[in-house]
Figure 1: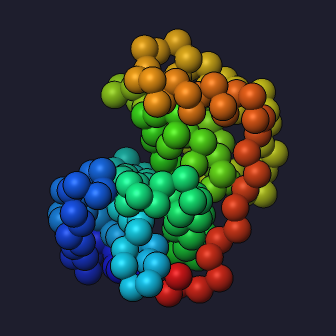
Figure 2 (figure 1 turned 135 degrees about the vertical axis):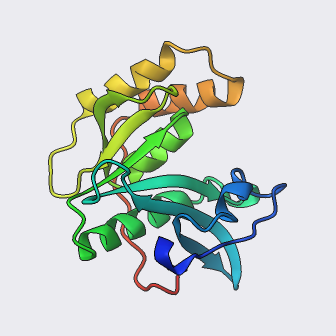
Figure 3 (figure 1 turned 45 degrees about the vertical axis):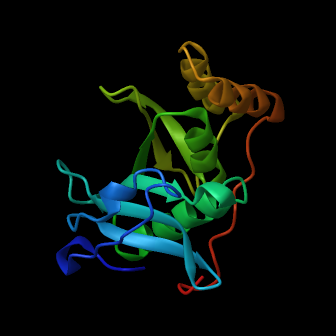
Length: 177
């Protein structure tokens, strides 16, 4: 955990290795990172919801391009969602705009709420301790299937549909992971 918004945490990421790198330089959000061999391999930015201070919103998630597919993103999301409960947030939400992020959020224990944002994102909530259904998971996949997707995103969608409901990852053991 690098810090909470009042701490003004910033993080410089290489824009060629991380998507959304510029979003992590801003200090308006809290930051948590995943490290491997003392190098940042993933990051998430978060803040209280603008309309409900009891809800934590995960704003941006990125995994270094050469480390994607290793489960870093889902474990990092799970880590922050677990801390949200420790900080007494009543809910932890994330909005995703592609099938890979959707699947990663499901692997972190989130579930599609049925809501979409005005910017074509699907809203998912931390569902730990509640029933997650294959039917609801597929509802979100169907929303993406109705869109024109790049080839790589369509391939993720096809694989996700065939695989069924993703298993939930475990939170990292320590905060220094």
